[in-house]
Structures are given as structure tokens and as C-alpha cells.
Length: 481
Image 1 (cartoon, rainbow, N blue to C red):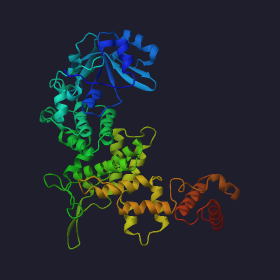
Image 2 (image 1 turned 45 degrees about the vertical axis):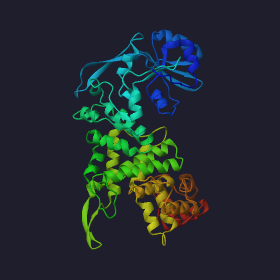
Image 3 (image 1 turned 90 degrees about the horizontal axis):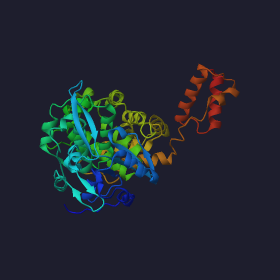
Image 4 (image 1 turned 120 degrees about the vertical axis):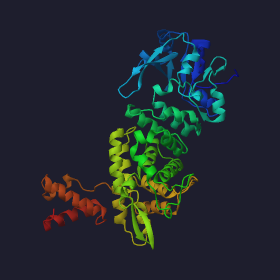
């Protein structure tokens, strides 16, 4: 085999400790062959019992034994963490409650490395690189598949035993921009996915949304592999809902003006806008997830209406319905906070309000600060995310990725800035403690008065605390708490 050079922080240490028995495996080797080096290195060590590996590594860093029973440990040195594993084999233990086979993982330091590679999902990932001399160990033709940009199954017999691999096929196709081998569709057909861990399903979806320049590729694979119908029924319904071709001229390769095709394009545009705006990963995921679910209410609100001299397809109040449907979907998928960011709350707010930003633009000659304040409040102050979602929705009528904000989005952001409206400015100026000196006792009346004052603040009746106190005194005198 041809030599390949790896270069990562602790390569020399691993070679010093384990010589010719230490290998980089999986995605790191794949990306090295793609000439896109990764910092994420998985290590495989042969011919050394796990206790020996632990003993040798311990003086050089922190060893975490959390996966020890599966022949895996984590080794951290200078803030860099590696998964370090023994060669392993998988054995099906029978059928589970939904027809899936439980998998017994057996670690064996003397198992041939080819057997470990055989248990991996796709040939492009079933490659090892011996660190000492750069020898590439590629028994299944993974290098050829990488050159051909193809996702092919390593072990056809073992593939159905882990149904998560169907989602991983979609994820790799999306992240790597690879084609899926037609044999994978045949293997996926009829495979029951409903016994999969919800957390792992959601994790694969998030990786498609975050790690792809065009998430639409992975989303379409989820559809074609039968995943949408089983695990994401709200999204699957979009494939059967059509849109008015005048307002939504975008159509798929077969001429269908479906909500699904528009949604996929909108997610691609959201991902592009997130990159252009340098969003954090948390906010980028929020934006892309909101784009994915922003129109799930359209099938339930689809109707014909005669206007403009013709029959038009409409979806009145689909934004409100989309928020309701997405809420139920998020419950089922256990989508809550992510890396400390309230992903669930923010996505639902964006979905419910995604049309209102454009409405401000359409009424720009007469719109007041009150409307901007109210919208900022309803988006929890995340006006940039709301404007970006609105722009992605608008750009979801074309295949070409957006290269900058359009006139509408630029105007919206400029107006929010000119009016000095932000997450900070929409915070309530008055608290309960401010009303006590005015003779208002804690209780329901105080709560109602604070709510009324806050609405007055958003309506721009007052802009500072002094003005709020004057308004409070006036309401108290008038007896209108």
C-alpha cells in the first residue's frame, strides 16, 4: 500500500509508546485522503491489552475509562482528547422488540485489524493508517470510493443490524457531498427505524444541518432512504404538499413545486447566511432548524382562493400552525437546549414570526417603532436570526446559494439599528420593586400593572425608567391597573 503522512499533536508520543501497533482510523484517514486534514483523530492500538495501554498513557495525560467495557478509553493531553480503542468485532445477539438485533461488541487486542475495519459502516471509513511508517490498510477499497465520491456499505450482512447507519449514510452524503450507492437504498427499504434512540436520531439530524455546505443533500437522502416517513412525519408531509407556482417558481428535477423542495432550498440558504454572518454553532443550528420546520404547517392550511383573477393556492396562518406542529415534533425528538442555548424556545419563536419581518418591509412607508419593538420582543431580541430566516425563506426560490443579504434584509437590520432596538432595549424598564414606593402591593394587581406598563414601553409610550414611573402614577390615579 502507498504511504500516507499523518500530522497531529501527539503522533510522536503514540509511536514512541506503541510503535508499529498504533493506527489512525476512520474519518481522520478519510479526510487525509481528501486532502482536508482533520483535528479529530481516532486511535486504534493492536497487540496491547487495554490495561497495558492505560498504564503507558497515564503518565502523559488524563485517561477516562468510561468506555472501558467496550475496549475504548479517552486520552486527553494538552486539551486534546483522543478516542483510543482496541480492535473490536460485532456479533448480533438476536432480535429486539422492533426486529432490530442487539449488538455484542467484543474487544480483542490480537484481532486482525482487517476484522475491526470490517465492522465499520462504509468503505470510505473502513481504512487505517499505521502511524510509524504511513502504511495505508484498505482491505475494502475505501480509497477508491473516496476518489469516486461514493458511499458504499462495508459489510452488507451487518448493515441492517444497526439501523442508525441509514441516517449516517445521509449525513456522510451531505457532509462529504458524496453519492449514495444504489445498494444502500435496497438495504434500507423496509428497515424498521423506530427503535432507534431519539437522542442519536436528533444528533444525526443536527450534524446534517451543521456540517454540510448544502444540508439539502442529506435531507433529500433522508427522504429517499425512507427515514422521513418513519422518524420525521411532519417533514414527510411536505413532500406531498404543492405550492402556487407563481409565488414559488422553484421546482425539483421532475417539475414538482412541493413545499419540501422549497424547504430544502431555504435550509441551504440559511446555512449559507449563517456562514456569511459568522454565527456561533448554536445560533447557526437554531437558524437551520427553524428553516427546516418553518413551513410544516402548510399541508394543514393548504386551500384554494380566488384572487388576482385566478385560483391561487394559499396557506393562511401557516406560520402559527407551523409553530404548533414543530412544538410537538420537538417534544418527540427531545429537542431542548443545546450547548447552553435554548434551541427549542428560539426555534419556535422564529418559526411563529418568520413572516412578520417581511411585513415590516412591505409597510415600510407607514411602519412605526412600535411594530419593530413588538417583533423584537416576540423574537426574544434575536432580530438578526429573524431577519436571516426571513432572507433564507425568500432566497429559497432558487438553487444558487445566496452571497449576501438582499435589500429587504439590509433595510430591516438598518432600521433595528437606527431605532436602537436590541435584546437589551426590550427588557422591562420597571420591576415590582419600582412600584412598591407608589403604593402598589405585590400580587395579581401588580402583575397586571407591570404587564400593561411593559406593553406601553414596547409601544414606545415611554423610553426610560422616569417616563415609565410617570405612566405608572397616571394609571394608578386613574385606577386602571
